[in-house]
Length: 351
Image (tube, rainbow, N blue to C red):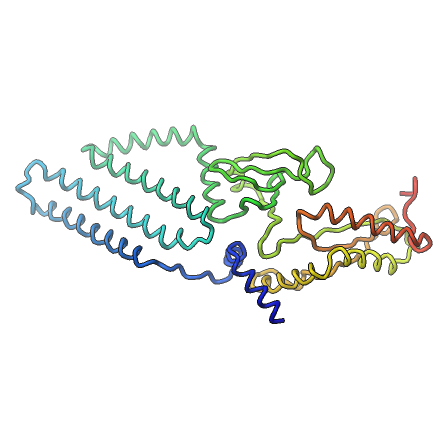
């Protein structure tokens, strides 16, 4: 039991597992702010109050000797205060929201996004300060932005989708996902599109084998489509099953034992131990960990064609699903065919 707890704690140290636990409801760690960051925050606050003070001194005609330059000083002090406030907000966002992120790639990308937004804000503030008729300038720029927004609606939406991917992480490079009709392994996440290494597809029958093609789709798809991720860090397995049609006269107990034992041999004791470890992680999430079976399960269903369907259900890693299923089918058929009196399969036109 102690060894299992040690394995659980070791898994919880992984950044992917830690992030998924936080998203599933576990209490996140409090971000730690370095003294250097606190120093810069305090400096920005002091500069902000200084510019605000200059603005009000000018407004109360303290700098009356400036004469014609007084309105200019007032505009510059107000603009400098606005820029300082924007830089203060940028520093706070980087320190409290971006710096605590575990993923260095996400931190780097989000810092670029924050710098971009801050740069745009500084540009608009500078325009309003430099031009006396700032209202006309801002309206003109707003109209230009509106026109560009309509013209570049799809790229802008895809860029927003990229930000969503970075923040919410519905998938990341290396995950196996399905979104819409596209399924595969994520090999690249750009500003505007995502690239998949296709799995399955029209050139292959139903399988988990790569087709050799790549799929590109706009990041905006994540905003209006369901994303199926087969690489959840808290439980990196999927349920798979194999089914056979047998006659009502078959020995169902024998069939169940053969299918269950064969699957047990393939899954192995190591897999069961790993699943038991991940069940400890799932206890910290809303998932009912008791539904996660550590051993293969065999169920029977009545088919529509007067045959019984025998199904064995087991857990497997997504990338090994096709290989494991092929080996299991071969072994099960070999063992079931050794007892034709106890197991009767459909033949010819009786299927």
